[in-house]
Image (cartoon, rainbow, N blue to C red; front, side):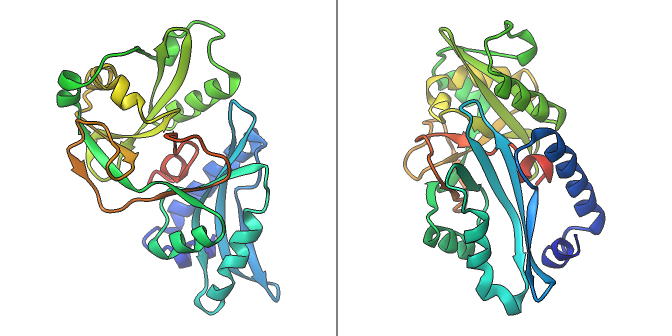
Length: 265
Protein backbone atom coordinates (compact mmCIF):
# COMPACT_ATOMS: atom_id res chain seq x y z
CA UNK A 1 0.00 0.00 0.00
CA UNK A 2 2.88 2.39 0.71
CA UNK A 3 3.81 2.63 -2.98
CA UNK A 4 0.23 3.53 -3.91
CA UNK A 5 0.21 6.27 -1.28
CA UNK A 6 3.60 7.47 -2.54
CA UNK A 7 2.55 7.43 -6.18
CA UNK A 8 -0.90 8.94 -5.68
CA UNK A 9 -0.55 11.35 -2.73
CA UNK A 10 -3.91 12.95 -3.50
CA UNK A 11 -5.48 9.75 -2.11
CA UNK A 12 -5.21 9.04 1.62
CA UNK A 13 -3.87 5.82 3.17
CA UNK A 14 -7.44 5.16 4.35
CA UNK A 15 -8.65 5.37 0.74
CA UNK A 16 -6.13 2.80 -0.43
CA UNK A 17 -6.80 0.48 2.50
CA UNK A 18 -10.52 0.51 1.75
CA UNK A 19 -9.89 -0.01 -1.97
CA UNK A 20 -7.47 -2.90 -1.45
CA UNK A 21 -9.80 -4.54 1.08
CA UNK A 22 -12.67 -4.35 -1.44
CA UNK A 23 -10.49 -5.72 -4.24
CA UNK A 24 -9.15 -8.50 -2.04
CA UNK A 25 -12.67 -9.53 -1.05
CA UNK A 26 -13.74 -9.53 -4.71
CA UNK A 27 -10.68 -11.48 -5.88
CA UNK A 28 -11.28 -14.16 -3.27
CA UNK A 29 -14.71 -14.82 -4.75
CA UNK A 30 -14.05 -14.32 -8.47
CA UNK A 31 -11.07 -16.65 -9.02
CA UNK A 32 -10.00 -14.35 -11.87
CA UNK A 33 -6.45 -13.59 -10.76
CA UNK A 34 -4.40 -11.37 -8.44
CA UNK A 35 -5.44 -7.79 -7.74
CA UNK A 36 -2.00 -6.45 -8.60
CA UNK A 37 1.75 -6.85 -8.75
CA UNK A 38 4.83 -5.32 -7.19
CA UNK A 39 8.04 -4.77 -9.14
CA UNK A 40 11.11 -5.45 -7.05
CA UNK A 41 14.74 -4.51 -7.58
CA UNK A 42 17.29 -6.02 -5.19
CA UNK A 43 14.44 -7.20 -2.93
CA UNK A 44 13.03 -3.66 -2.70
CA UNK A 45 9.56 -2.84 -4.02
CA UNK A 46 9.93 0.02 -6.50
CA UNK A 47 6.80 -0.31 -8.62
CA UNK A 48 3.14 -1.28 -8.30
CA UNK A 49 0.17 -1.89 -10.58
CA UNK A 50 -3.42 -2.95 -9.89
CA UNK A 51 -4.88 -5.66 -12.12
CA UNK A 52 -8.65 -5.99 -11.70
CA UNK A 53 -9.65 -9.17 -13.50
CA UNK A 54 -13.06 -10.62 -14.33
CA UNK A 55 -14.62 -13.48 -16.29
CA UNK A 56 -17.20 -12.70 -18.99
CA UNK A 57 -20.05 -14.56 -20.68
CA UNK A 58 -17.80 -15.79 -23.50
CA UNK A 59 -15.30 -17.30 -21.06
CA UNK A 60 -12.76 -14.54 -21.70
CA UNK A 61 -10.79 -12.98 -18.86
CA UNK A 62 -10.55 -9.20 -18.94
CA UNK A 63 -7.88 -7.47 -16.85
CA UNK A 64 -8.28 -3.76 -16.13
CA UNK A 65 -4.92 -2.09 -15.50
CA UNK A 66 -5.03 0.73 -12.98
CA UNK A 67 -3.00 2.89 -10.64
CA UNK A 68 0.48 1.93 -11.76
CA UNK A 69 3.50 3.72 -10.37
CA UNK A 70 7.26 3.21 -10.61
CA UNK A 71 9.74 5.27 -8.63
CA UNK A 72 11.55 7.85 -10.74
CA UNK A 73 14.97 6.21 -10.58
CA UNK A 74 13.48 2.98 -11.93
CA UNK A 75 10.98 4.50 -14.38
CA UNK A 76 13.02 3.19 -17.29
CA UNK A 77 11.92 -0.31 -16.25
CA UNK A 78 8.20 0.50 -16.41
CA UNK A 79 7.86 -1.00 -19.89
CA UNK A 80 9.30 -4.28 -18.64
CA UNK A 81 6.81 -4.35 -15.77
CA UNK A 82 3.86 -3.74 -18.11
CA UNK A 83 5.15 -6.28 -20.62
CA UNK A 84 5.30 -8.98 -17.95
CA UNK A 85 1.90 -8.08 -16.49
CA UNK A 86 0.23 -8.27 -19.93
CA UNK A 87 1.99 -11.43 -21.14
CA UNK A 88 -1.02 -13.79 -20.98
CA UNK A 89 -2.15 -14.04 -24.62
CA UNK A 90 -5.47 -15.61 -23.63
CA UNK A 91 -6.49 -12.53 -21.62
CA UNK A 92 -7.74 -9.12 -22.73
CA UNK A 93 -6.16 -6.08 -21.09
CA UNK A 94 -7.78 -2.66 -20.76
CA UNK A 95 -6.54 0.75 -19.67
CA UNK A 96 -9.51 3.11 -19.39
CA UNK A 97 -7.68 6.24 -18.25
CA UNK A 98 -4.10 6.31 -19.55
CA UNK A 99 -2.07 9.48 -19.30
CA UNK A 100 -0.53 10.68 -22.59
CA UNK A 101 2.80 9.14 -21.54
CA UNK A 102 1.15 5.84 -20.61
CA UNK A 103 -0.88 5.81 -23.83
CA UNK A 104 2.33 6.01 -25.87
CA UNK A 105 3.89 3.23 -23.82
CA UNK A 106 0.77 1.07 -24.15
CA UNK A 107 0.79 1.51 -27.93
CA UNK A 108 4.39 0.32 -28.09
CA UNK A 109 3.34 -2.79 -26.13
CA UNK A 110 0.56 -3.72 -28.53
CA UNK A 111 -2.44 -1.82 -27.18
CA UNK A 112 -4.88 -0.17 -29.59
CA UNK A 113 -7.12 2.83 -28.92
CA UNK A 114 -10.80 1.82 -29.18
CA UNK A 115 -12.30 5.20 -28.23
CA UNK A 116 -10.69 8.59 -27.91
CA UNK A 117 -13.14 10.99 -26.27
CA UNK A 118 -16.18 11.24 -24.03
CA UNK A 119 -19.48 12.80 -25.11
CA UNK A 120 -22.38 14.02 -23.01
CA UNK A 121 -26.01 13.31 -23.94
CA UNK A 122 -28.78 15.47 -22.41
CA UNK A 123 -31.42 12.87 -21.63
CA UNK A 124 -34.54 15.05 -22.09
CA UNK A 125 -33.35 15.87 -25.62
CA UNK A 126 -32.43 12.24 -26.29
CA UNK A 127 -35.85 11.09 -25.07
CA UNK A 128 -37.51 13.44 -27.57
CA UNK A 129 -35.26 12.99 -30.60
CA UNK A 130 -33.70 9.56 -30.16
CA UNK A 131 -34.89 6.25 -31.56
CA UNK A 132 -36.99 3.88 -29.47
CA UNK A 133 -36.04 0.37 -30.51
CA UNK A 134 -36.23 -2.37 -27.91
CA UNK A 135 -37.13 -2.24 -24.23
CA UNK A 136 -35.16 -1.50 -21.07
CA UNK A 137 -35.84 -3.73 -18.06
CA UNK A 138 -34.59 -3.85 -14.51
CA UNK A 139 -32.66 -7.03 -13.68
CA UNK A 140 -35.22 -7.88 -10.99
CA UNK A 141 -37.94 -7.99 -13.67
CA UNK A 142 -36.08 -10.40 -15.93
CA UNK A 143 -37.52 -13.82 -16.79
CA UNK A 144 -35.43 -16.62 -15.30
CA UNK A 145 -32.69 -18.04 -17.47
CA UNK A 146 -32.42 -15.32 -20.12
CA UNK A 147 -29.08 -13.99 -18.83
CA UNK A 148 -25.88 -15.97 -18.52
CA UNK A 149 -24.54 -16.60 -14.99
CA UNK A 150 -21.62 -14.27 -15.80
CA UNK A 151 -23.99 -11.45 -16.76
CA UNK A 152 -26.12 -12.02 -13.67
CA UNK A 153 -23.04 -11.88 -11.44
CA UNK A 154 -21.80 -8.71 -13.16
CA UNK A 155 -25.13 -6.93 -12.72
CA UNK A 156 -25.42 -7.99 -9.07
CA UNK A 157 -21.92 -6.80 -8.18
CA UNK A 158 -22.34 -3.44 -9.88
CA UNK A 159 -25.78 -2.88 -8.37
CA UNK A 160 -24.28 -3.50 -4.92
CA UNK A 161 -21.54 -0.98 -5.77
CA UNK A 162 -24.12 1.76 -6.39
CA UNK A 163 -24.45 1.54 -10.17
CA UNK A 164 -27.72 1.68 -12.11
CA UNK A 165 -28.09 -1.66 -13.85
CA UNK A 166 -30.51 -2.58 -16.63
CA UNK A 167 -31.08 -5.06 -19.41
CA UNK A 168 -31.79 -4.07 -23.00
CA UNK A 169 -34.15 -6.38 -24.86
CA UNK A 170 -34.59 -6.55 -28.61
CA UNK A 171 -36.72 -9.50 -29.65
CA UNK A 172 -35.36 -12.51 -27.79
CA UNK A 173 -31.95 -10.93 -27.19
CA UNK A 174 -31.08 -9.59 -23.73
CA UNK A 175 -27.88 -7.62 -23.04
CA UNK A 176 -26.74 -5.81 -19.88
CA UNK A 177 -26.37 -2.05 -19.48
CA UNK A 178 -24.48 -0.53 -16.55
CA UNK A 179 -24.32 3.14 -15.56
CA UNK A 180 -22.06 4.44 -12.79
CA UNK A 181 -22.47 7.73 -10.89
CA UNK A 182 -20.40 10.59 -12.28
CA UNK A 183 -17.86 12.00 -9.83
CA UNK A 184 -17.23 14.96 -12.11
CA UNK A 185 -20.69 16.22 -12.98
CA UNK A 186 -22.76 15.34 -9.90
CA UNK A 187 -25.52 12.97 -8.94
CA UNK A 188 -27.84 13.73 -11.86
CA UNK A 189 -25.28 12.53 -14.43
CA UNK A 190 -24.23 8.92 -15.02
CA UNK A 191 -21.54 7.27 -17.12
CA UNK A 192 -22.31 4.40 -19.47
CA UNK A 193 -19.66 1.89 -18.41
CA UNK A 194 -20.98 -1.28 -20.03
CA UNK A 195 -22.80 -1.92 -23.29
CA UNK A 196 -22.22 -4.69 -25.78
CA UNK A 197 -22.21 -1.99 -28.47
CA UNK A 198 -22.32 1.76 -27.96
CA UNK A 199 -24.67 1.99 -30.95
CA UNK A 200 -27.42 1.05 -28.49
CA UNK A 201 -27.51 4.77 -27.64
CA UNK A 202 -28.32 5.48 -31.29
CA UNK A 203 -30.78 2.66 -31.90
CA UNK A 204 -32.51 2.81 -28.50
CA UNK A 205 -31.43 6.19 -27.14
CA UNK A 206 -34.95 7.43 -26.38
CA UNK A 207 -35.90 4.21 -24.60
CA UNK A 208 -32.78 4.30 -22.43
CA UNK A 209 -33.15 8.03 -21.77
CA UNK A 210 -36.70 7.61 -20.48
CA UNK A 211 -35.57 4.75 -18.24
CA UNK A 212 -32.87 6.94 -16.67
CA UNK A 213 -35.08 10.03 -16.43
CA UNK A 214 -37.46 8.06 -14.22
CA UNK A 215 -34.56 7.75 -11.75
CA UNK A 216 -33.90 11.49 -11.80
CA UNK A 217 -30.89 11.27 -14.13
CA UNK A 218 -30.64 14.23 -16.54
CA UNK A 219 -27.52 13.45 -18.58
CA UNK A 220 -25.26 10.61 -19.60
CA UNK A 221 -21.63 10.48 -20.63
CA UNK A 222 -20.17 7.71 -22.76
CA UNK A 223 -16.93 6.85 -24.56
CA UNK A 224 -16.94 7.68 -28.25
CA UNK A 225 -14.69 8.19 -31.23
CA UNK A 226 -14.18 11.59 -32.80
CA UNK A 227 -16.85 12.04 -35.45
CA UNK A 228 -18.77 8.89 -34.48
CA UNK A 229 -21.22 9.42 -31.64
CA UNK A 230 -25.01 9.63 -31.04
CA UNK A 231 -26.65 12.59 -32.82
CA UNK A 232 -27.99 14.08 -29.57
CA UNK A 233 -24.49 14.38 -28.06
CA UNK A 234 -23.92 18.00 -27.11
CA UNK A 235 -20.47 18.14 -25.54
CA UNK A 236 -17.09 16.60 -26.29
CA UNK A 237 -14.58 16.37 -23.49
CA UNK A 238 -10.83 16.64 -23.66
CA UNK A 239 -9.22 13.53 -25.17
CA UNK A 240 -10.06 10.48 -23.06
CA UNK A 241 -8.64 7.38 -24.74
CA UNK A 242 -9.55 3.82 -23.84
CA UNK A 243 -6.88 1.32 -24.84
CA UNK A 244 -7.14 -2.44 -25.24
CA UNK A 245 -4.72 -5.31 -25.85
CA UNK A 246 -6.43 -8.41 -27.20
CA UNK A 247 -9.57 -9.28 -29.14
CA UNK A 248 -12.19 -6.51 -28.89
CA UNK A 249 -15.51 -6.11 -30.70
CA UNK A 250 -15.95 -2.80 -32.50
CA UNK A 251 -18.21 -0.43 -30.57
CA UNK A 252 -17.94 -2.34 -27.30
CA UNK A 253 -18.05 -0.24 -24.13
CA UNK A 254 -16.64 -2.11 -21.18
CA UNK A 255 -15.42 -0.34 -18.07
CA UNK A 256 -17.08 -2.87 -15.79
CA UNK A 257 -15.04 -4.27 -12.91
CA UNK A 258 -12.72 -1.26 -13.19
CA UNK A 259 -11.34 1.45 -10.94
CA UNK A 260 -14.57 3.37 -11.57
CA UNK A 261 -16.37 0.68 -9.56
CA UNK A 262 -13.86 -0.49 -6.95
CA UNK A 263 -11.99 2.78 -6.40
CA UNK A 264 -15.06 5.00 -6.99
CA UNK A 265 -13.11 7.33 -9.29
